[in-house]
Amino acid sequence: MGSLWTAPWRLDISDFIKHGENEITVEVINLWANRLIGDEKKPYDGIVGDKLPKWMIKGQQGTSGRFTFTTTRQYKADSPLLPSGLLGPERIIQN
Image 1 (cartoon, rainbow, N blue to C red):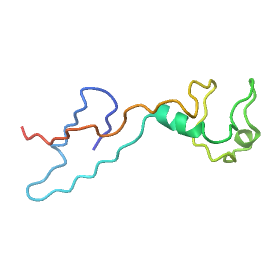
Image 2: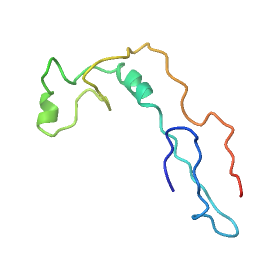
Image 3: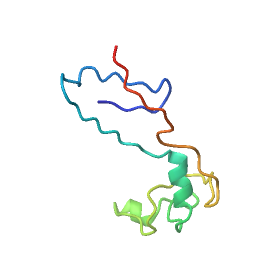
Image 4: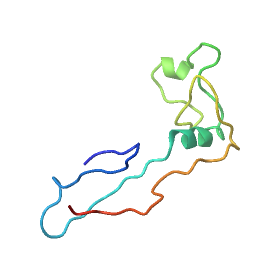
């Protein structure tokens, strides 16, 4: 039905709702910064200097178990996580 990542945090789902009973599934994704912080707990296998890692050049998966890396390291393994997810209240409003 759509994705939300900025204010006003509203999504019009009226075209998808039918008369009677409906089931709505909400998938919540964490913030990119929190993923980077979590990955700092794993060994680094990303860019060093200006060199892409060999696993990436070969089109393979990294060996560290990380999901992410960036060209700069702005977070540490002990950086505080940022508030993320459904912080509520969630509502369905009928117009």
